[in-house]
Image 1: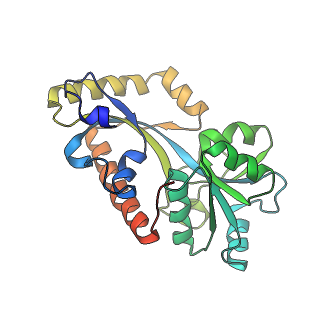
Image 2: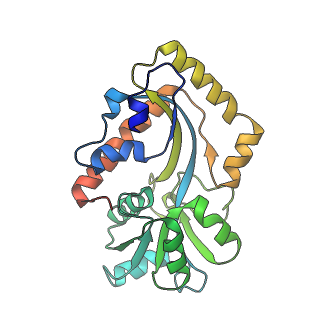
Length: 247
């Protein structure tokens, strides 16, 4: 990130960023960068939902069953994530606050071991990027209970969203978008934005996103600017209120 924000704003240095771009200024002290002053949003690319999943042998088969188990014994249901401050961790925290639950977070250093321990029965549930869960769900080793995107995933069409399971408006996904150093001239922003829009409209890119459980996010640069502000605010509040610290 440092190499991006210290680069000359000429359109030749870009970063394909994810949610951490909006989260890190609140997660780390001191803030590693000033999002408003040091970064130029160009265009969103796509979004991959966070999912809740259990092992195929788990007694928990649906999101309502997860909620019932959590309410029956508050603080006893364990939820693995790829680590403190990761998007799945923040999504899990948003959900437990929304649903009024008390879940026991088990942070790992990456998604692979988190998934392995859920499949092995050592942890009850995993909150994970759909991209990581999909191959094991297709292999019958993971049971995906819910997707946290606003709409159902095309690659998991039978899996309900959290929103349609009784929590309208709930959404938590991993998004990706291109950013540049601050001070990039508007004509270059427009040129780069148009190039990204053309790319994500192509069948090849759409097929690759779909294979990963994601959806393309075409739209104006202003859409990305708004998303950064919204996510900075909502995740910043969550981090402060829950006293979340990075690993």
